[in-house]
Amino acid sequence: MDVAAFWKAEFTEHHEAARRTEAALGDAFAKVLAACVTSVRAGGKIMFFGNGGSAADAQHLAAELVVRYKKDRAPIPSLALSTDTSVLTAGGNDLGFDQIFARQIEAFGRPGDVAIGISTSGKSPNVLAALKRAKALGLVTVAFGGKDGGDLRDVADHVLVVPCDTTARIQEMHIAIGQMLCGAIELDLGLVS
Image (cartoon, rainbow, N blue to C red; front, top):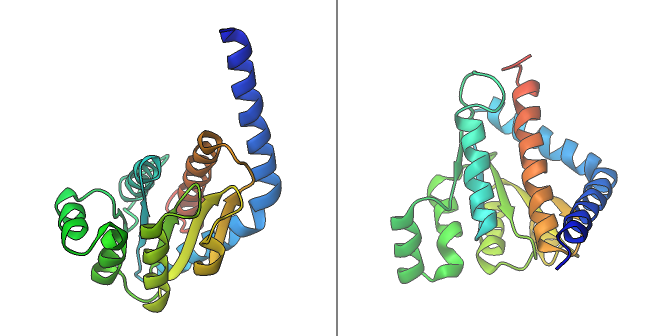
């Protein structure tokens, strides 16, 4: 294996994914930011969910909002629906894995809250089910996807589809977009300067 060539190829693909994402998603990002800020100002919360690496991103982003992103400030109401193992395993066992996030949306979601589902393929049944349930309950629905978007475009109010087919690059863009969203929410709410 030529490690130097591998290293360069990975960064080349990353930079290309970043350039394409920057060019394609600016307007959609602004709409998602506006939805999040509107929700928080009205007393709402932001809920993140996904599977595998996307579950880790959900947890990471919820923590950035609750604790802090760049500077100390008041907490921003947020939670990751992938972190409570008792709820996940009971829901998976009793209701089926496809319902683990939808059930939590029913429990915690209120009209005007924002539900952000993360799925690199756009085909995760439990993410799609949760977004459908959230929309039915009056939440604002947001999807982070990749590739061709899968079925996310049919179930979310706002869709950020990373224009790339490589799962690793999509995940890198999701966390970058998510962290930018956290920083922009802080700024737009006037919690940091």
